[in-house]
Image (cartoon, rainbow, N blue to C red):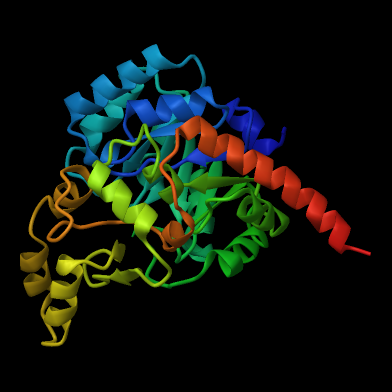
Length: 315
């Protein structure tokens, strides 16, 4: 499979394994890259020295392209960016911030830059900032999300209508059928997150992985819009948030309830009651923990089968 994205990243398949906090360490990124996708290390859950170690281990584990996802809202962002350059990373996905802040500097250092957005407005801002591609992520996605609640099915064609750089679709994509659907709508590739959470190589706690494969439709919901919108599995913490909302809380009261490191407690340490469990709506379609390579093989097999089925539908 060859298109603008496979050529841009030098990969076999137009599939990106999302860089997710507490889930996407060097084991997952290297496994995804070795299987023909683009693996991403999730820097959002890593101190700078930890990120450096993961980059080096990933380089030892694969000779294929890989990248780093960097949420730009963290205070040590400058140190993280310098480490990425020092370690020779060639692909960076930025998110949760203004793409103008780092895009030019990264490109001056020979890095391919992609920015994650949730609206047409911010897709165009990213393009104007000079990014090489854009990820448009729909409301279905797990983790931190857009306030507009625009679904992938509507977001992708709206962004495609205006965008000139390659477009990567994200949000609710875990199968080859979904991959074909968004590519028909105008995407050049897909970014897959939640499906890789339930992979053997994911750094998520095994208890969290089990919660994901046991999840059904309706088990997740977007909340905490006043802070940073996040899609969570419904557990005790989620119920505590909803109970607080009934009292019309202030932002400070929401921050107090959230506290610190709650996502780490939930996804990485396995506190399934009081931890923050971030996952996409597509969790209801994930029923098994598999190796990353098998997930990618399944997606490609399903994609090719869906292509044939689509041809048979047209008369």
